[in-house]
Image (cartoon, rainbow, N blue to C red; front, side, top):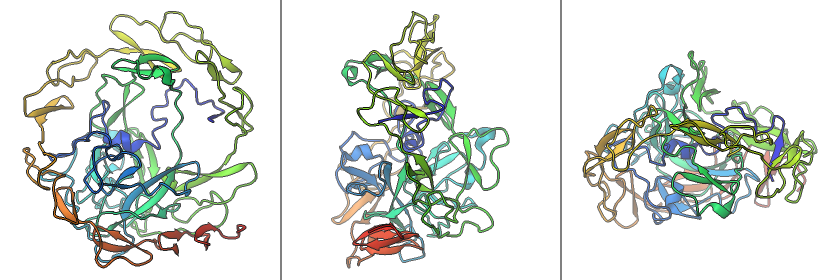
Length: 540
């Protein structure tokens, strides 16, 4: 049940990056039309959902299918399944650098994200790129020397899934430091937990929590009948926000417009900050300590400082619960609403907002209850329910929805004829994703070499474009990762409190954590009881 707090989330102001917090990985890896950013000449295209078997190279979770996860660049069991670590929040797993200089922490086999090229992506950050060069990977160091799968990300790039992609996004994904001296606390700091999964050399699996994205009202009764370039909203097929919109550089398509993720104003960001999704955020561990490892110290109170630039998970007063933010780095007590699945629309939620209860298919839930929009033929006219109408626009413009379909505006309609040339003017200030030669593909308005990597080929074989294939056949007990065959397991087997990380046994627990079970670590302020971590002083 979604609850609304003042100001109402149905505000008609332009919130350019609302809802991207928990989904930035998808935004970072995909362009506006679902194309994977090819950050080098190596083959890195996303394959069909559920088509990649266990132990083979992958780019996104959807390639592995449910309940598998693309972790450490291979398909394997999702370590979030079966754990209640995050409660109502979203559990996220990632391979992060091991905290010490243990054997195998040299990132062996990681190679460069470029496969055979330079491994870097292009993208201009403009004057608003801030200090993007100081980050670009999990556990980014302040001196800008941290690597992303063996490659240093450039200005206005972020390490995602071990690849440098254009744009300024929160650091989350798989990467391995080339010298084993990550220096920071990794993408996950306090509020994380160890997990058991196969990770690249020099990294270890960690779980963290993120708040769920805002719910979207989608009526399933029309989802299969909508045509190309349409989406189903409120039981009606309407124009897709980003259909035909091509964003370049560090911009992503949001609400039908290209927003620059690296635009943090003319002056950029201050020292110790970086630009993420158009706003300046503090870089964990940066300052006089040079990015040294910080061990969090937490008491029982939710939101108290952990001593490492974040805040602690803990207890709240009655009527409030401790919620995680910034991928588990910060926590705060938030009001628990009284809304249930059966609460009527418009009822006070007990937290200064109202409950989003059920309404008829032709109505929206507003603070005064269910409201049926009243619209004329004009696009963006007032619908009487706090939103604007879908309707007609002047010639050359189309009516596009915003704010989950509650608001609409007239925008330019791109003109890209089927079979047209790649890079042709779309009539709206952009470029068409058109046709190229037989061995080429169209990317960002330019024709480039199309890599060729057969599924039954050899791992690391030439891809026809000067790079190498990131997938292929390897000897038994090895898997293909970034064009190199690496061992799957550890021999001898790892002991209690250790996890196999690409042929090397790495510690499960981070500094400051206490081993509870062979695969579970308790953080500061927690104690182990019957194989579970509970807050110190909490009833058992």
